[in-house]
Structures are given as C-alpha cells and as structure tokens.
Amino acid sequence: MGKDRPGWRPDLLRAQREAHGLTLEKAGERLRQVAEKAKLKGIPAANPQTLWQHEQGEVYPGPHYRRAYCLLYRATDPELGFRAALPGEETSFRLTPASDDRNGQHVLAVERAIHRIGPGGGDADHMAVQQRILDAWKRRHTGGDPHRPVVVLVGGYAGSGKTEFARFLTQLTGWPLLDKDPLTRPLVERLLVALGGDPNDRNSNLYREQVRGIEYDCLMQAAWANITCGISSVLSAPFISEMTSAEWMQRLTNRCTALGVDVAPIWVQCDPESMREYITFRSAARDAWKLQRWDEYIGGIDTELRPAVPHLVVDNRLGAAISLADQARLAIREVYA
Image 1 (cartoon, helix red, strand yellow):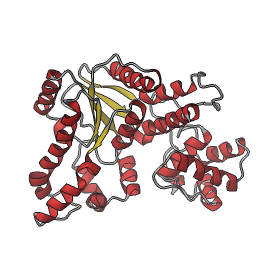
Image 2 (cartoon, helix red, strand yellow; image 1 turned 45 degrees about the horizontal axis):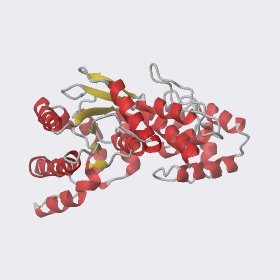
Image 3 (cartoon, helix red, strand yellow; image 1 turned 180 degrees about the vertical axis):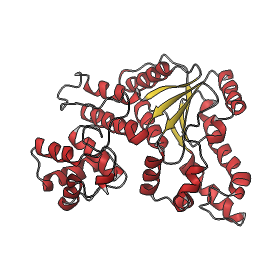
Image 4 (tube, rainbow, N blue to C red; image 1 turned 45 degrees about the vertical axis):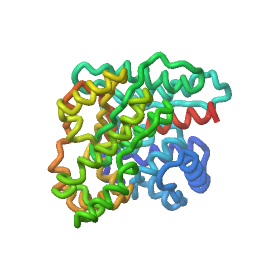
C-alpha cells in the first residue's frame, strides 16, 4: 500500500493535478494519451477511482503509472512525491511547449538523461561516451560523425532497466540494438526442450552449462556482423559473467581495436525493490523462478557487482535514469514531430 512507501507523499500528486486545472476524469484521459504516445508497456486504465486512490495514498502507483504521471506533469518522481530524492539527484525538470525547434529545450532534456551515465570504475571516460551519444543523435539531423564506430555493452541484473536504457540510446543515436532475449529466445527455448528441460528455465545447471554459452555466442555473432562492417551497435544483456571477466573483456577489446572499433561497457545499477517491481510488472515466464524464490534469488546476487574493467555506470535506482529518458523522448517528439 502507498502509505507505507518511504518518501511517498500523495498530496504532491494531487497538488500537481490541481495546479494543471485537471479533474480526475480529465487527468485520466490525458494519462492514457501520453502513455500511448510514449508507447509505454501497459497503458494505464487511469479511471478516476484509481487516480483518487493514488492521490489519497491508498494505492502506490505501479511503474507504468509513475512513468505516465511524470510525462503528463513534466515532473520527476521526487517532485510528484513518489519517492525521496537520491543523493545529488536533480529533482526539478521544467519544460515548456516547444514552439521553436531551436529553443534548445529538447537538447537540455537529452543531456540530462545522458548525464545519468557516470564514472563506474577504472579510467573509463564517461564524458567521452556521453558526447559520442549526443553527437550521434545530432548527426541524425545535421550530418557528420567525428568518432570511430563503438560497441556499447549495456549490462545489469534482471529488472535493472538495462533494456529500456539501451533502447533509449538507440533511439538517440540510430545505432542498431541487439537485445539478447528477443534475439535468442526462440533458439534457447527449443534447445532447453530438446535437452529435456523447461523452456522458461534460466536458473538450472542445465541452462548454465549447456545453453547459456550458446545464447551469448549467438548475441556476439550478431554483434560481430555489425562490428566487421564498422557499424556502431548497442548490446543489451545481463553480461554478468562476461563483464566481470577481465579476460573476456580484454579479448573483446583487442578484437574490436584491431578492427578500429571502440568498446564502451555500461553497467545499469538498480536497487532490489525496484528490480522486483519491474520483473513483476513485465510478467515474463522466464522470471517465474525468481519471483517464486525471491529471497533466495536476491540473496544469491551481488547488487554491488561491477565489471572487472574500466566501465561506466547508469544509476537507475528507484527508476531515476529511465524517468529522465522518458522526459527526453517527450522533448524530442515535440521538436521533431
């Protein structure tokens, strides 16, 4: 229930609605519209009763509702009272309707979202990667790219928000996205069944010893098809074993360097409660084991795990990074629609 959530202040949500001059009915209508336009997964029903329960603190809004609220009111999660701000988090996000495509508001929105990519470990240059992504985005409208091709590895635990952030990067840059799950799932499921296992298994020794290696090999073979053509790409997968193996990362880096391609490992950090919420919301069959044995699952992972090589970190605790990505997408649409 909402009243037990740390930092949850439902009075701020109601204040936002009233400040915008919206009734519960009108707010619900616009909430659905903004969610559909943003192509959020799970368009909220947004009936007045549900919105009222949110504002009264009787029901804590799910992730799809929170994202839609932030887009509707042009605000961050802390501004809407969904949670307390993270240390050093910028909590104010103001945008006015863009009547002039040169007013720079969309650039500011993108920069704020991209600045969630921060130092992670080693001597990885987060500012260089930020600039490369921004340049690729701007190139789509102005032409020219001063950089070498790059393969961006976006890793993190299940439910961390890595896929959503990887999609955001591809939407900005135009670089192709290679997402492990949709790319390899049909093969993995058929292989597990052929080996006498469960097609949704991602936790047994059978999967780890006989299937997982093939799954990642398929992903990397697809990546090499782009890399050898000098095409920048964004790869999304947990990469738990791979990013924590200095040998694996060094082999990848050496091979890419020989082809004139850079490697940028990005780790998406998230808290256990948010990961569980994301996993529950997406309702994927492959996550059933995790949800049924959550304490066992979360006790078996290291939330402080980081890659063994110089890398960057996106701080998505409490959904902070994805919220900024949503705001940036909205700002871009208003300029280039």
